Length: 136
Image (cartoon, rainbow, N blue to C red):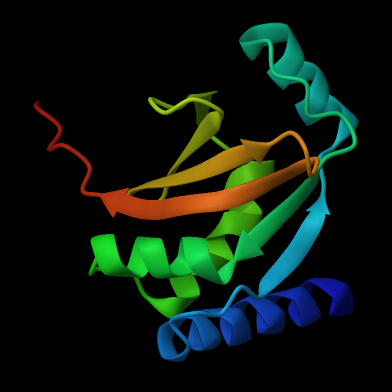
């Protein structure tokens, strides 16, 4: 539990850095890709991410904040839950991207870029969308 709280604090600090330092290349490693995730990505998407590390970088946070004005600092904490408990996972429109969707009060979409040379999955963006109204 302490490890997760420490990681959450690092992410929140990184969001603050990303907001104030437009040139920051700081990042926070959030964990290795699990064997299960690597197996799923390879089997269903043909993407080998075995032994890759997952990274949240200031550049990706800035991109998300600049394009999606409704994001808050705490939305970035959801990334930890989204990647471990997605409702939907698929390949992105852009080459070498993976998209995760999680249904909370809104749909959250987290997009990672596969960096094969560095063996990393890095935040590309995060955004949320309202759920469609249910018809009765």
